[in-house]
Length: 104
Ligand code: FES
Image (cartoon, rainbow, N blue to C red; front, top):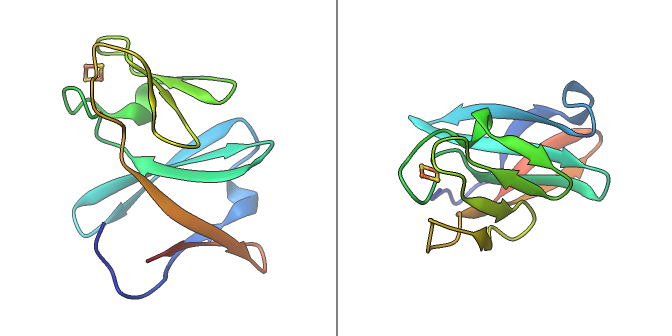
């Protein structure tokens, strides 16, 4: 996601802990995941075969793609179980005054 400016993604309170939300920006989708440890952002398109991770299963700090079962670390995008071989792209987000912001 190339942007030179911070982009507001909405209030944190709209995403309960343990839940996810997909945000569309310029024809791309970002998956926000709210964990006990904070809010994280990944590309919603799976690094393996482009299925939407937003339909996946959140298990602790991991997300399992429902298409072929790849498991990613939500915080880092690391592949924990294939068939994916490349990490899931992640994005930096901050929460300021209750608002989630995507930062360059
Ligand atoms: S598309 Fe996600 S594991 Fe294949």
